Amino acid sequence: MERNEALPPQDKSVSLFNRLIPILFVDDLTAERDFYIRLGFTVSYQGSEFPDFIALASGAIEFGIERKQDFAPESPDRVLIWQFGITNIETAKQQLTSARVSFREEWVTPREDWKYRVLHAHTPNGYHLMLEGAGE
Image 1 (cartoon, one colour):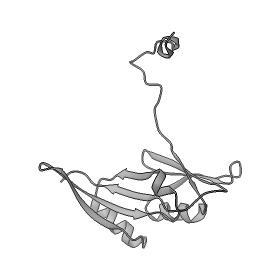
Image 2 (spheres, rainbow, N blue to C red; image 1 turned 45 degrees about the vertical axis):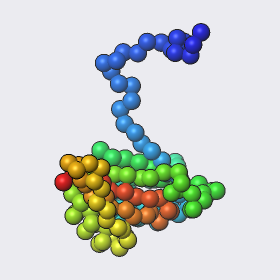
Image 3 (cartoon, rainbow, N blue to C red; image 1 turned 90 degrees about the vertical axis):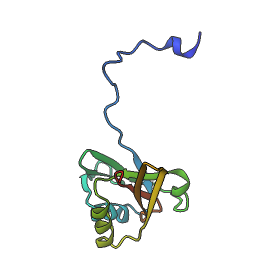
């Protein structure tokens, strides 16, 4: 019997999954939290039940950061590019500048009729942060 035959049929009209909440491992939980707060995120959970975990949110976006004992700060770039779609590239540039976050701006042109800007930065724990603007 093939693996797919053992699975029960699913109702295609109803999605089982309704959101994605990634958790990033970090060494310095406070620095990472403060970085995202300076960019406009809010803390949606921080409590004594999970002292090494903080959830952050902005609109419909939510993710967690968790302190991990053996976190290797040279590894995040090899594991994950943390990319957010943004509504206004100029506002994002101002937010990064006021938060004193170094960044570089890149124009991406996959095709002649498709062009957008991306801001590249790094979080305190070494994650490559990409903020992708709408097509221009």
